[in-house]
Amino acid sequence: MVAHSTSSGGSPQPAHTVEPGRGSSPHEHGPEPTREQWRAQVEKVLRRSGLVGEQAPGGPVEDVLASSTYDGIAVQPLYTESSVEPGAPGLAPFVRGSRPQGSVAEGWDVRQRHENPDPAETNREILADLYNGVSSLWLRLGPGGLAVDDLPDALVGVHLDLIGVTLDAGAEFGAATEAFLVLATEQGLRGSGLRGNLGADPLGVQARTGQPGDRDAAVALARRCAAEFPELKALVVDGLPYHDAGGSDAQELGCALAAATTYLRWLTEAGLDIDTAAGLLEFRFAATADQFLTIAKLRAARRLWEQVTRSCGASESARAQSQHAVTSAAMLTRRDPWVNMLRATIATFAAGVGGAQAVTTLPFDAAVGLPDGFARRIARNTQSLLLAESHLAQVIDPAGGSWYVESLTDELARAAWRWFQQVEAAGGLPAALESGLIADRLAAIWAERRAAIARRADAITGISEFPNLDEPPLDRPPAPVQPSGGLPVHRYAEDFERLRDAADEHLAATGSRPSVFLATLGSLAEHNARASFARNLFAAGGIETADAGATSSTVDVLAAYPGTPVVCLCSSNEVYAERAVDTARALRDAGAKHVLLAGKPSDLEGIDGFVRTGCDALAVLTDVQTRLGVGQ
Image 1 (cartoon, rainbow, N blue to C red):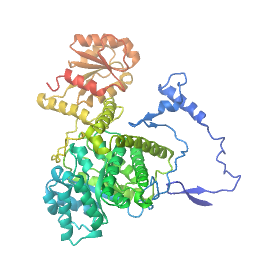
Image 2 (image 1 turned 180 degrees about the vertical axis):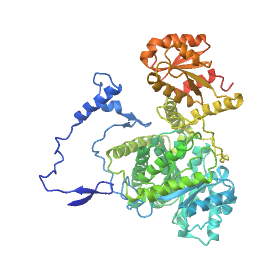
Image 3 (image 1 turned 90 degrees about the vertical axis):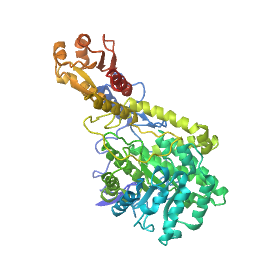
Image 4 (image 1 turned 45 degrees about the vertical axis):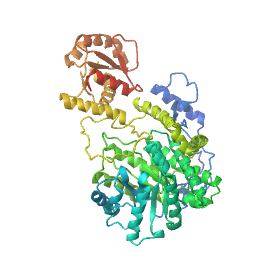
């Protein structure tokens, strides 16, 4: 007999029911393993891998395998049952989603971004999107994109009653709203016929430009929206400026929560009731290739907002958060941009699993310039595939009940709440932005993140790991320049990409790439692992390598040496002990100026530096480029 049971947040799974005494015991093959038995097995593996010595580790093996987020949250290798109670979908505290039905009935809103300043081209792109799976538009207007006056030409043939439109005009949100409402009136649309967001975000303007946004105009727009357009939202609570500045997930959440709390104060002081004020806000968060942190961030955001609005006296239904998730621009690369498709797929998956009602997948070439038609098609089809083929929306909160996800959600929410309280104690977000508190705290996390990227502890595939030197850079028309003057805008790959740019300029100027000679000692089996490591590392700086192949003596190495000023010895520790010193001396006599060795630091004579896992690869590559005359 087969029954079906539904686990927490999961789809129905077959559950075999058998008669007692006939194989029904879960311990039929012995007693249930204990945690101590698991630890003993893990210790064996760690000793074989060299991560711990022959003696048992000083603390639990979990500490050896644990990692930490930029918010100081320890990520454990093993989670057991959590005491966190996330509630039910569509009910407070909304951890499991703002809607009881999730995205099962309609899927999530596939929202494509448009910022091409050419209205005719924008119109072609919009129509292509709407005919091929996109359900709403995100329009960047003003100095950062399409001119407000060109909005009518960009929306020719677009039926505003069939789609949602989110405006993003920065300080020009008032003019953008008027232009949009004129179009709606021309189409005979009023009241509930319009959906989307008018995009007022004075604090987002302050974060990006350093100049206070227009509070009075935003409040007036919100009051008008509440009175005339019940399906339209008026304000965006944008977490992207804090994410793009290199901040942590808790910092993004805390700043967004502080912005939303400020907007609630402004609107209620202007006479709106708390339920109406909360309903006028839509939150925008970054979704990254770290799928678990993205899932937890979206779930934590809903819990935090419920806590704030409950404290303000909002009714339960008004405490649900409206979320728009955007695949991270900070994680995109200009080099090997094809890998961005994979990053965006994971991030979009996480946004859907995390419960966002609207998702924007940035095209893979968005960091290079204005996306082309192919990139836009892949972006929208990424969402179509997840919805129509992977059936991702057919399960409500599929991560719910995961001990790891529930624990991470709880810890992230607590970290974000602590940061939110610090911002509030500093006078609220406007004051914290003006005083530099926000910028300083974000800069501290960016410095930490930047150092981890430099050491390749945070790997960037195609950039710091497995770069392709033969791939020509992608060429795209430049994207509109975004407002500046406020928080910085970073991409995680920017430091390594500067090295690649410098190496390409050297190639263009001299006709050859900067090159390092790999002095491979011994057989292929003896030198291959470290030679591969060194080859990969130097390529991350745009530096090509030549190697000596299998060698049995210093004479063999010298016969292959092309005379480059920088060389790197590659082999096993045993071969180093026998041949490294003599080989380094001979290479210096032959013209080498700087001798590196692939491996752990040692006291070998004649070695100037070491390259190994965990070294500051960025510093090594910068130094090598200088020694090779790059940029001179």
